[in-house]
Structures are given as C-alpha cells and as structure tokens.
Image (tube, rainbow, N blue to C red; front, side, top):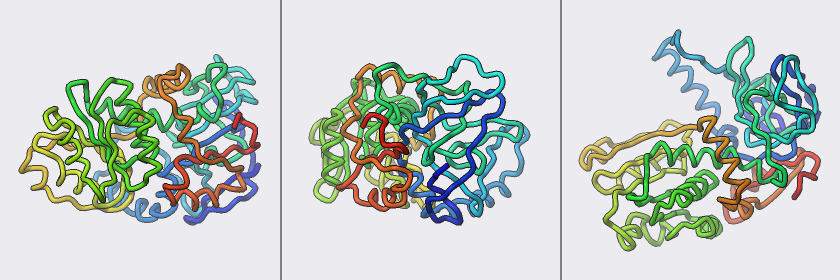
Length: 355
C-alpha cells in the first residue's frame, strides 16, 4: 500500500507492506485522517524527545505495575496519523460486534502479545497517512449513519479538548482563557461552550484561528500582540475563578501562562511540548497557582465526542481547510506551518470520503 512514511526523522511517500489483522483485530480502509500538530512536532523535535525518554527511563527505572508502551524505532518505517475514520474490510479471528462495511473511529491503541502500541507512533501498526490500517475491534466506535467520515475523523482531536476541560474541573462558576487556537485549543473552546462556561477568552496570533474560535462560541478573541488575554478577561469579567488552558505546546508557554495568571488561577497544560522547557517556580508560588497537565482522553470521553459531532452539539466543519491524498502528505506538513492558510488538513487516500 501507499503510505507517508517517517524514517530517520524525515517524511517520504513509499510502498509498505499491507497490514494483516491478528486475533481481535480488523483490517480497515482509511477514509479520512486529520494531520495533527503533534505529528508535525514529532517530525521536527522527535529526536530530542526520544533522548529525553531514555533519560527518564534511567531515572525512574522499571515499573512492574505499568503497562509500558512499545516505543517505535526512528530508523524503521513509522506511518503517523491517529485522527482517523475507516471502513472495516476484513475481520481477524474472534472478532465480534463489528462487521465488514462498518464505518468506524477508534482510540489509537493496539494491544498484542508484545505489549501496548500507539497507533501512528508504531513500527508495527501504521496510522492513517496510509491506505490501510489494522485496529483493535474492542476499541472501535461505529459512526452513526449520515455523519460524513471527514467530520467523524475530528472525534479524536475533539476528545482531547473534552478531556482537558474535564481535568480542569471547570464549571459554570468559572471563566476561562484559552492560549492557542489551533485544533486542540479550539476543541477546548468547543467543550467549554457546550458546558455553558463563560466568558471564554481565546488568544492567538492568527486572525483565521480567532474567527474559528468565535464560530465555536468564544466570547472574546484577542491578538496577544495587541491585548493580553488576561487583560481582556478583566474587562469582561475579572471576578470569576479563572482557568487558563495552555494549548500552544512550545517552550516558554507554560512559564508565560504562569506569569500572566492571577492569584489562585488554575493553569491546565494541554499543549504537548516535546522539547526541554524551563519555568520560574516563584511565578506560581507567589500567587498559589494550581498547574495541571492533561493528555489524551478516556474511552467514554472519546465516544461522547463522536456523539457531540453526530448530534450537532458542535459544528467543526469550518475547521476543515484542506484535503490531500497520501501523496500530498509531505506538502501538507509544510502548508500547516501557516495558520492563516490552514486549521486542519485531512488525508483522504481515495479522495471520496464525502468532501
């Protein structure tokens, strides 16, 4: 099959072997897969991240109670892509509850005799920047009839925002500031507004991203070069307990969020920074901040995100700003460097998923 392959931290399109489903797994045809910012970061900063992972493993030692993931080897082929919607075309031994022809989304995890694999960051389980994928049947959610695959593929990034808001324990007594209005920040805005939380202030340099945040219900949007996000919150509220969502994920942003936060604020870090970073603890100590980190989502949050999309509780269609086949993935990675041009580009291997 054709796939966009990461090898030695470079991206190329190549022929790779078709995957074969094992027991409890299904073979699927990729209909749509979103290109995630974490994949762009992995391509650029993955070598540094891998070096740090080795250091952490040496520091903490083995944990006999932990199910440690099988880590991919960068010199071998890795097909990224974890925001997928697929059609089931083959069943492995013992599969129940899933039929050929089902359109599905699923959590990007596979479990086999060798351990836990992260689909899209695995040498064994290719992600959605390819024509075919093997997925664990038990982790799949059937896409309701009438939901286009291109929208269903946004289940995974929406679930990241749903989980971040849940982790923050934000309720209608709070206000929120969202720093960074890429797909993760926009997912946080969407979930905050679904929960009736406000005012929500969104901050991003990109005017296009600010317009998308407004579409999702963000009460105030600011260009931080013109007005700091917390200053905007003080103008429209300034009284409710504040939660600041750091959804940028680059060095310096956690410290910047801590420095701007008022006393007793919670800073929820959902941006994935893959580089070494530094903070000044007194920024948090002096104002007794609560700094919380979030990653991923639960199965219930994932399923609930699909339901929100299917029921129309959130309208994510405007986030879809481009589509490419597998051959166009390297170019799409380059195009996503311009936030004024794109928010979310989908990989649609056959170009017929309902665009």
